[in-house]
Length: 182
Image (cartoon, rainbow, N blue to C red):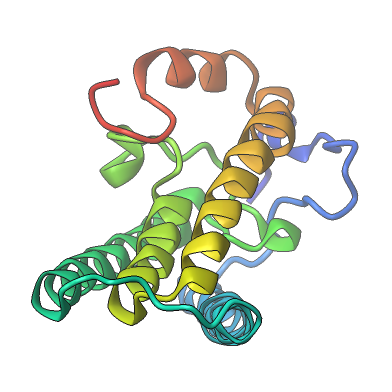
């Protein structure tokens, strides 16, 4: 299968490369490995460390914060699983920059917001902040949300504009970055 010229172009960033994997099952396996590492580091180790650095807890009622955490974690995981499927089947890649989708993905949840994977991951981290009512995890969630936005604006979007050209520019005009309907 020959890739379109636009997807074969170098991005100028050696750590962002379109996937060469053909089988959907292999793409899913790579995505799950990536997710395991990401979740282990950014959703277990770093929040634990953030809580150890700032161990103060917030005075939030357990019932509402647990309910909010449950909603966020289940929604975030559902978003994440849906997006892995769309990336594997339609984009022919993974969320890992070294194995990025070969084709622009604009369907499914990607037709509602441009960054549903990152949004789902942030929802899980915010769920942790609510559930544990930890000042350290809250500070981490805030910093990671800002870092995610900056990463998208200054690294991901310019690379996608270069790789997918007018198709990506049109997609950006039609689909909001983070929140539906904005």
